[in-house]
Image: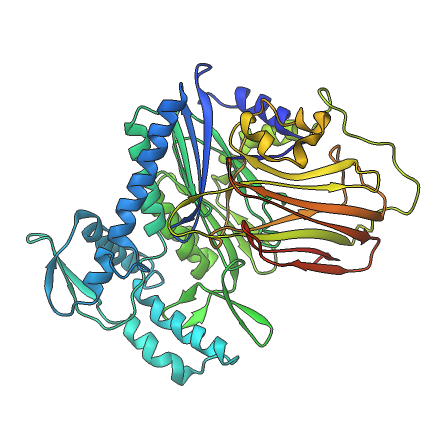
Length: 514
């Protein structure tokens, strides 16, 4: 699915064609596929192939491999191999290669991080979740039994018999790097089909393989909306990127947010590092380090990274300070040229600017957010097409905030957005998807924002505008949510009832967070 930045799509396409030495062949096309409810989050898949048939073959290989691995490693499926094994005790059980390998990797990472990375951290997390329901911070007496369990040996592995024996009684969850491990396997499966390049992005963790140099936006933990400006943009070729952060999941206690990432050694949520992004040759390494770096001190993280060739990172502290590894700049350098190209207004083809109306200017201390959740169906499901835009009182489309679709021929599914020739022309023919690395979101949950600027980047006047959210399945159901709002400086929140495609949605005009 294309996640298209309307103003800058042409500039990005040009930059991609010229940036770096690892670009796709002129004979290839970029095919995009998007799914929700994949490993508890969303999947964005980009395939470089000569024909649609080749791209779909790679798509099917990715989906099949994810499904196969989930049936082995899922902590949430009671029928997965891991879940069935976890219900055994003191019994040497023959296990698959994947499960044996993952359990061995957890042993290695537990040792390398001095206990910070631990599958039994789930015992501590559950104490915090229980306390949150009662709206109190768990006491040391409540945490102590869970902490003690994390210090136990939870399993033993026998390489000769290829068995795993469950010895502990702590709650176990294969999180952290397991998703990245599956991404690695899925990307390999796609490349074996003959695809020339692939980008597999599951919930903000991704792998880039083949002949593609991919620009990756690193999400701002303070502004995690899909269309928010990134804190960094890197160019990635044959690398993996993973981001861990506290800003999309966790618990609320007495009005304060506590991270879902806990330090199993002391039972406390990680709070000093609010976002950690790691680029590494191996996806599982990137995933493991991103989680570990959220717990360790920056000094400990730097020391650990130095032992692993090819690892670079970007950390964001609670106070907003960014800490970059010495080699992070090597990834940003070509992307800086890309950023320069992107910021040039793409108005040569269509000039979207309207004459500035008279009246007071947009209040720069305010912003509009559009939050929505796609209705979930059982199992993996293709993400519907989505358009979000703003119209002024003359029904002029001043800003297209998001346009998510597969191919130009499917633009007609966006019936309301598509009605304008001048708007339609801005999307047709573009082959660009933003690849974003950020903390894992829930499946189908998205957020967009508008800062009061039009499609040419000019600030609009304060006044009445109509906000639109359009969601359509390919040749299927269709929903349009719209609301006229007075955007003149007074906060306003509009909550909409659920419909066939949108489980929840709201438009919120509010003060910018300080």
